[in-house]
Length: 227
Image (cartoon, rainbow, N blue to C red; front, side):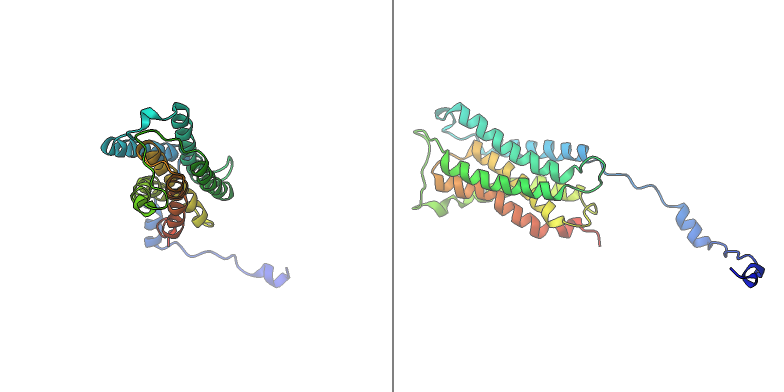
């Protein structure tokens, strides 16, 4: 700094415009996101919705003819397929503000593969069960539609809660939400549908997870990205 610089008068910033001062004074603090609370809301509302669908559609007629262990543990697998991806998509790691993108999409991929394997390999049936097989495979499309309809609630709620909270990787998080919602759809089908051939359970029931994930990845970022 030269002597000429030291001789310059002190700079006084201009006063703030009254309009700007009034605008700043009217700002209110933004409420922070509460991930655990949001996860609980997604879980409770989605399960109530799934339960309502089952109440309207009825429990599968062959339920009493099937192994209780398969009904229970199969249902638990579908339930975990719903909870885990939604948890990883909605709840950040400790000390972070961002969703766990890699873990979320990994859980979605694992769920999609696991349910295909389960559907193909484990499909007990009873006298009241139905077998569509290849001859009537296409007639089972209604289950895909029901599963996707079930997935709507968790995906929409998750998208609402994550709006503006995903600067990068929003499609992967959306895919995880879709896979979680699709697993809830699979749970409803597990308790409602009495079609037990492996093509139906391994492709259509399990396929709900994959289709819901792909649709969510394509559509949800438009709702979660703030432009």
